[in-house]
Amino acid sequence: MVGERWPLEPLQPERPSATATRWRFADGAGELQFVSSVTEPFCATCDRLRLTADGQLRTCLFAETETDLRGPLRAGASDAELDAIVRAAVLAKGPGHGMADPEWTYTGRPMSLIGG
Ligand code: SF4
Image (cartoon, rainbow, N blue to C red; front, side, top):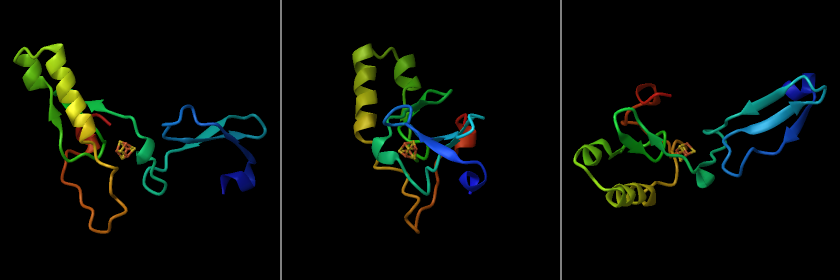
């Protein structure tokens, strides 16, 4: 719809796992980006992790489980032990947010409580 009024040209994604599709206004006035994470999921190429301010590692913004790093850190875990915890969390990462499933409900900590 935007392109009908202001012609757009597609731009290459910033990297293969980029979240946004990028467009440039043909008149050079600027760029436009869309993050269509629900209607066009890009979970298959997601390489994101989030460490919350309270030391919880999340492998998906919509994860319902978190991996505690604060406890092991405060208990003096070694780098190798922390590495193993992070790797185990990443290996257990699910295939995506699952919102396309009509039965999908969310019971985890919402993004508003983890900083975005
Ligand atoms: S919903 Fe989760 S798996 Fe999908 S792109 Fe976002 S953070 Fe990655």
